[in-house]
Structure formats: structure tokens, C-alpha cells
Image 1: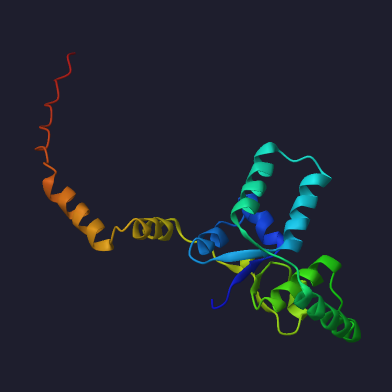
Image 2: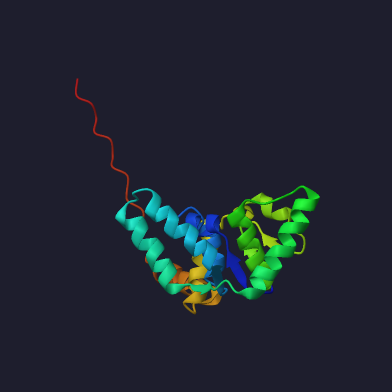
Length: 182
């Protein structure tokens, strides 16, 4: 993907809950950001209902380590024209979704979301994170080995060495059957 990635609230929520491992694997390879609007929605979610301490810690850690793009005047100008256009077309978005879509447009980001409502936003580059196929376990292992600097050749050499260095014990002799006493 070309362009900076901006995560929608549903993508961040799924990551925090461990429900988006294919997305997490992709984000290991590319920089991303969130809108300050997404931060507001996440903080509202934490304040609205009691959540377990572990989830709260995960969300706070995510927010502390992720680039949060501020809302600015360019976003406000883009918002006004986009909202008017969507209302004329009869396809308005929910208020927070409209703010996030506008922010992604103003920042020239690719919005990462599973919310299909964003598809009606003209000019918005959108990527549905829920459509990323889960990697096969072997693919995940290969990817981890590659990140650790271990090549397929290294693995092949290790397997080959293991096969040649194993000594095979001679087959066990069969016991002779004892004759049955009558």
C-alpha cells in the first residue's frame, strides 16, 4: 500500500481485543496513525462502561505509542464540503465517521476500516482490514524467522544436519513365542 495508513476506531478496537491478527501482522511492516477523533471515540468507550483493567492498559499503551493526527483548519474546510456533498447525494455518514473520513482525506491517508459506510465517500482511499486473510501457521513461522534473519536455506541446512547426525538403532529382535503348557 502506498500512503500513510490511518486506522478507524473499529480497527483499533479489534486490535486491542486481539481480534485482528492479520491486520496486526501487516502493521508490523508499515507505519500508521490515528485521527484525534478515533482517540476521542476510544476514550469515550473506556469511560462509558467499565472494562477490564487489561483492555484499558492495552488501549492506553496503544494511544501512548501511536501517532495521533490533530484536527486542524484544513480538516474543517474539507468536512464542510464533504458533508454538503453527501447530504445532497442522500448518503450522509454518522457524525464521527464523517469526521474521521474527512481527516483521512485531508491528510491524504488510506483509511483502514471494516465499516462499509465509508465506501460512499468520494475520493477516500479505503482498505477493509477484515478482508485480510489470516496467514497460515507455517507462513507466520516463516515470517518470524525472516524477521530474525534466518533464511529458508538456514532452516534446510539445519534439518539436513539433523537427519544425517541421527543414529538409527538396529531393529529389535523378535522374541520367540513360549510354547503353551497344557
